[in-house]
Length: 174
Image (tube, rainbow, N blue to C red; front, side, top):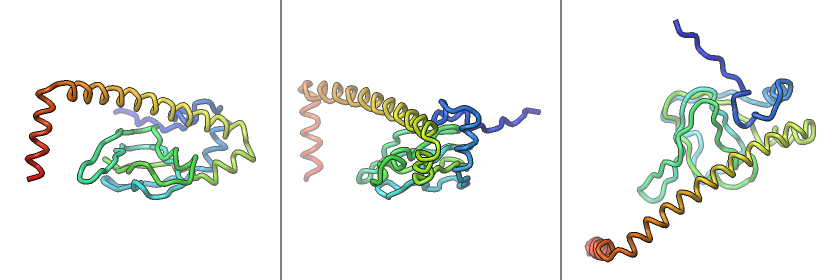
């Protein structure tokens, strides 16, 4: 019989620079919450102040533009999302929906801010981990933009593609 692995906050990238005592301190600030499958956890353009750590399950992060839905990422155990809401009080940049039943640990902005006063080293390490993840995501976005730019340039530079685009656009306008 296979033994079920035990979730450990040590395995969450967000806490990679924390020792066991520091993780224990942070764990007291987390709230646990469960969601069924196909539940919208975060709505794009809503305002939030929570970061979610996936204890168990999977989510899909999406953008919706008109009738199109763009899947930005699929995340599973030990991943986290909502880090931008912890850093700033602005609208959410994407939606997050469960693709299977999920269990989350939730860290609210006010709890992280209180860690700055009570345990500045812990807060600094968490912020550094968030900065690292955001930097990686920006680098990946830059790579994707370069790819899209090169594809677009190839299409624009190709006479047949230009004609096809113009024909398809004019047929839609009729």
